[in-house]
Length: 204
Image: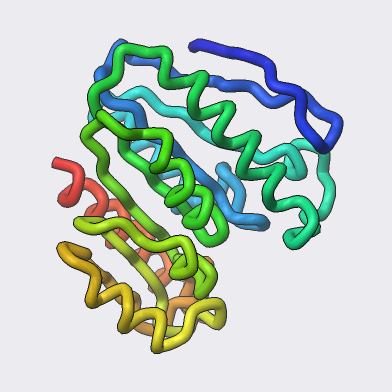
């Protein structure tokens, strides 16, 4: 487990912490604002990456560690800058391939981190991108998963994603921004399984 401390704008130390399995593939997990790394979709995505033998870098944002609210217009650039620093530190490993898995606002971080990954084979998994994600773009040949009841992305954005070259778009009927189905616990559990199965199929 490699660690390097980075001083955060939010007054805490950030760690470039990689779970290492001596892999040539690094998986990078990027959470949302409220959908943190310990929530099911990201936790099971992490477990899948480890099961596939990949190294894993889990990005935890400074405002999350400090238990503060994120003032997006004022502070988002600090979040991006710090995420890039952590990511570049992790790339000191002997990697040839990178797998990005992101959720919600993390899908914006995801695309911006791609500028730091030239020279690597890259796979992209976007979980519940938001309308603003389209402003920075979604990469070609990606896996994109969204719910039909997600209020943070509109039909126009969904249609734009579908037109991106090589994108596999999976829409979960009745699922919200957390990919939960209201008043249907077992249905929500089934969604988690469907998402992880789709990720595994895409990655192998």
